[in-house]
Amino acid sequence: MPQEQYMQHRSTMPGSEGPQVYKVGIYGWRKRCLYFFVLLLMILILVNLAMTIWILKVMNFTIVTCAKWSMSVLYPRTQDGMGNLRITEKGLKLEGDSEFLQPLYAKEIQSRPGNALYFKSARNVTVNILNEQTKVLTQLITGPKAVEAYGKKFEVKTVSGKLLFSADDHEVVVGAERLRVLGAEGTVFPKSIETPNVRADPFKELRLESPTRSLVMEAPKGIEINAEAGNMEATCRTELRLESKDGEIKLDAARIRLPRLPHGSYTATGTRQKVYEVCVCANGRLFLAQAGTGSTCQINTNVCL
Image 1 (cartoon, rainbow, N blue to C red):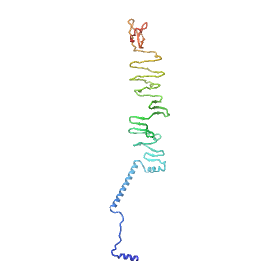
Image 2 (cartoon, one colour):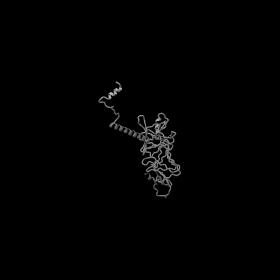
Image 3 (cartoon, helix red, strand yellow):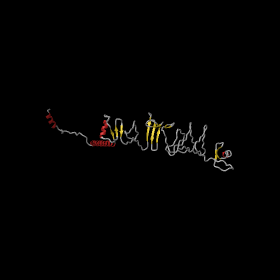
Image 4 (cartoon, rainbow, N blue to C red):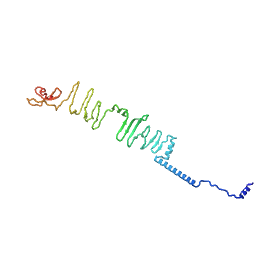
């Protein structure tokens, strides 16, 4: 059957209708949900962009900085970073004041050539030296009240390497040519001290004193006490003993004064005169006796009792 006759025949068929149209798309509540999700996604993108810009602003990032930082992987010589932090060939370079809220681990910390390096803390600054087992070997603590150092040995040397001060469990060594004590109360040694020379500064007094115990000076070859431009005084509360076991005690001076020696009894006869002789008792006590034509020491032996 030809096509024209077929179409004419189909149009004359009973019960035939016109062409049907099918709608394609999303309608109703599905369409509203889709628009809602698209709007929510746009809001999240805007919030994310705002947070990124805020982070870049706070961290002092710039568009050039971000580009250079990404290029530093391909070109290691690029020197840039965020804010005062710069990425260099040797590591990180930080300019200005910095604050670390957590522990800092670094192989080397140094300042710019010609500038000082400062460490500031509200409480203390602690430097720890650890071994392979993370055990503290040496520790330095600088606090508001004291500076403490913990270690097996503490040394202070000059630039040339000369030892100035050393301390450990056994001894404390002072390697300087002169040790000066500037305290008003001097220096207190609870135990013995060994030194070849003890002297005061020019025109200053030197006092060796033991308030509650004895003061002993010993030397195998001798002890010399010399006051070239002043007096020398030795004062005690009870007894002052000068003892020589194998040698002698020599008092070499133009004048020797003993103003508080006891006087012996005077003889009844004869006139009182101001001339006396020095007598010695058997126990070594000295006393004065009135001089006469002969020795009067035997007569005045009551002082020796």
